[in-house]
Image (cartoon, rainbow, N blue to C red):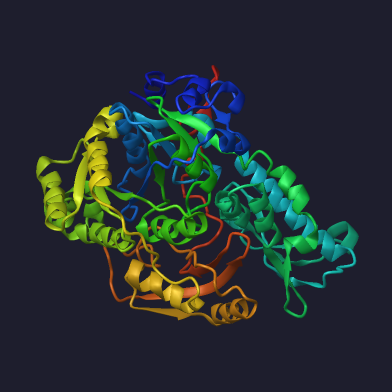
Length: 557
């Protein structure tokens, strides 16, 4: 069956019925068509009680082209719990159009475990990303206008740190020069600039971390967007445009409610990337889900070294949330890839490669266990996986004392995730977490970077460029040294080199620059060659998409 036939077989309900299943009336929601609604958080505050459900965070091994199926497994777990009669609510990130039309594809699951309506969610959805793009670029325009006019704030054009934003992969816009023209009123003040993808915008991170409008305003106000000629930071509060930005974000702060293919409610809200930001859905959505459901399943972007670590050290610190369990998703062929197998050479897909690749799984188990949270391994089963291969993984997990379950949610929906759901429930009922952070937030910036590098990534040491050293010194002098770190690096490896698979130890992490996200409340060390604006692959996913004459979307995965 193709995606359209699968979607037609889904057991979906009008969004008002989905809302009613968690105690929300028609007056509590703002429908965006028949199957999507926004839920004003003011209404949530009135409806939700003080109860708190169990929080499960889904992470994964290091991504490979073989596929791990983290979102499929996450949605399958929600469906599996629903099949067991549990009151479960999902809380996931919104997909970005850039990767959807680039190489990654959509982020709504697959097969019989998807959130619905997947095409709308993967595209414009409710306009949250567009609202952030507009707010970001309004701020950029205000800065440039300040330069053109009397520059009362004394901004140095060479020290404007806020780039422009768009939700499309466009490498040619990473580094540009703006302000070209015959005079400053017509063309602006010439200076180097560039674009980042909207999900890398600090405003995206701020929206996901804010707990209410007042918090959103405070965070926007304290964003540092430029420096003066004498090196003093310039904030958004100085530019007096926070009110206009708040107006643009007035609806984006409200979480979006959709459903799985089997009718379980899911909040899809917030969209920061995990390789260049903190990579989780909004705190508002997760807290609402915890008060409306008995079990909440959320997802941290990419693997435990990125979204997983940032969930624990940034989101938990900011929100007071404490996970009750972590699920780490793996697949047989992905593990083989970490053991040296080559996807294009079937002869390399061996049991030995599988055994060799288990080191990557072990590192991610070690990472999440280090926070004092129990771990369950979920193996996303494909049709080509043999029983012998599955036994190897199951036996290995048993030997190291970690619960493991297989999921066939892609082909069976919630029925294929019953075993996983029961395993998670058993761990939640019988293992009490003892949560703790990786580092002391008041430690020097370098100590925090090195804690993540050595204990989570497996590095032996960290080196810093001259620019990075200078930035760290400046941030500590300006009073920002007590912020957590949000390291930007490749998602394709535990290291900062995307070509290295497995679980290398003792290598050196290279920090090339360090950026301040004062509004979001963290410091961003950028490592390796990672950029804040992705490029398109040789054959973008966009080239496989079309709209038929009868209005059907094809090729959107």
